[in-house]
Length: 298
Image (tube, rainbow, N blue to C red; front, top):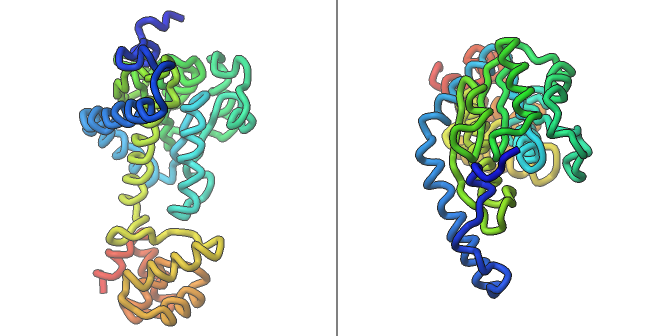
């Protein structure tokens, strides 16, 4: 594998004396380099937009969003998928992260896993990938065999394919129907793509999942209305969300949340429309989970 053509593997001229810098100088340089990331992502917003629209389409078909990657890229995919459950109240099956080497690879490198062209297909077959699903292949280099194999298989069964690479003209971009390329540039520590490249990938993943969830009814105004109150902190947050959305007092928010069995969406509709639990749930179902539409349909 020729790494010399990958900008993520080249030396950063601004950090040639990294080992001689003071701690303050290292931190300032890291901060300066990190500032470049959102500027470069901005250039790829049209491609990210197209990818989000496809993810939304998959969700409307009851399809899933599946991230695949190895190493840091795989861990970021797993992280984004895991966060969708508490943030948006999704079923764990709806957004999934697959990492080369399986769950143990989250903390320990699994030798050879990312170099397999067949392992991702096996992982996708295990979750019964279908044409309704969207597969997002994540690789800073853009040429990880695990991701290449996964995208090839996803294409074979007509699933939607998206790629995220931090190098231009990458191999995975050639395979994805909706490629996203953001050239994050040389790292201050040569080849350490958990730095700028990792930040680039994380910001793009934030966009993909958050925007697609909002467009499928997971927000009202700018409130996180599908949060699942699974602990004391989240129960309190749910009450505050209801209070903010309806301008009601704490007691009414608490009582209504209890009546709905901790369903924030239903509680908001009940208070704003004067509905019973049953009527509010019915309005929500008729409007495919969109709270604003359920309220304005009154």
